[in-house]
Length: 417
Ligand code: UD1
Image (tube, rainbow, N blue to C red; front, side):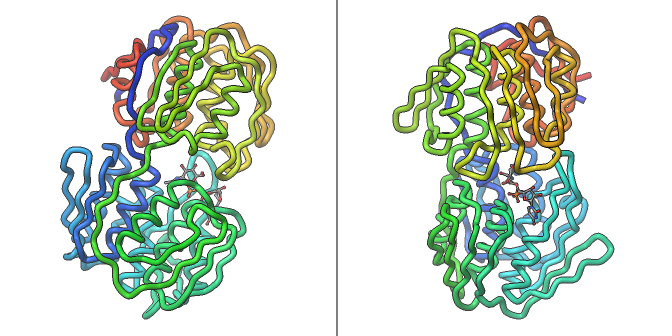
């Protein structure tokens, strides 16, 4: 059981590079099963969720190797379309294998993902979309089995722009007969990255990154080499940590256009932000002004940065109102922030953050990935020492977060107990 021990009060300073996005790498690794040829995926972060996806691909029969920052998948020998339940349970995103395996094998069996700490997280949009493409779906004993001799293009209108459903349906439609049109599609940059990878493999996808995506089915995909886009959520977390500790950090290898909503909220809070091609610099010399935030699908303010942003706002001057509109229960970090002296009250999907002069270090526990990142930021801001437990959640999405922050001057160590 590892924990981070953080001595707060050190402003983050320096320059660091952003690595590839977990949320782009996972669906792209899943998509490799749709071809028989080798795929080289570059700048894949070395994270728990990525390791689980690599293990799942191996269990299905693929040869998978990591060479420095790249993951090389040889999917020729994949024979099984049954995702092992124990691995499936270790990562919600294994649901991404439904579309690709159904498209390649005409059948797939996955264990049904349950709700998680941030909400119910049903998969009804995924299943409704698969049915629209001609799949039969049977839900029994905690498993979902999809079968179809052939998938056929269709028009699918999503009730909500779900990232995962958009990705899963793009993958399934890629090898279907005819044209599929997905309306009210999610527009996250990771969806465009997936489509760019699939198009390199020979798919015919237009409009990804927009709310109408058109996919002309093709019969065959070949292998490709693809470099993952930078992780906008990791970038955002580091920028927030820098600004919350009144430091100055320059991120290289970033994509400022993917962070427009965050950067504009940082400016509203009084943080100095400058961008130049793939470089973002933030600098903050005085306390933030309170800022209201409402999360929404891209290009709105990302729900994945809600908790880290809240941590930074706990010492802002004035009262901030945060509305979480994407997930119904994404405020689990509030209790722990309160233990550190934050003044936050929650009513359903709204949190009211009254700025306090200073947080004080405490022993706290991460219960989800981004909530965990928020506690680390709070620890960096706080007076005294903070111990953050529950690192298995943080490790799912941040590669050696302690090393990354230490390089920027933070006093943080990983301890085993
Ligand atoms: C992805 C991201 C996650 C991010 C989220 C929203 C990955 C691996 N994860 O998750 O980091 O927080 O987008 O930006 O990319 N919903 C349904 N039925 C469905 C599918 C979704 O009701 O079939 C609901 C969800 O419960 C949630 C909302 O739609 O309230 C958005 O979820 P979705 O966009 O699907 O999130 P994920 O793809 O799971």
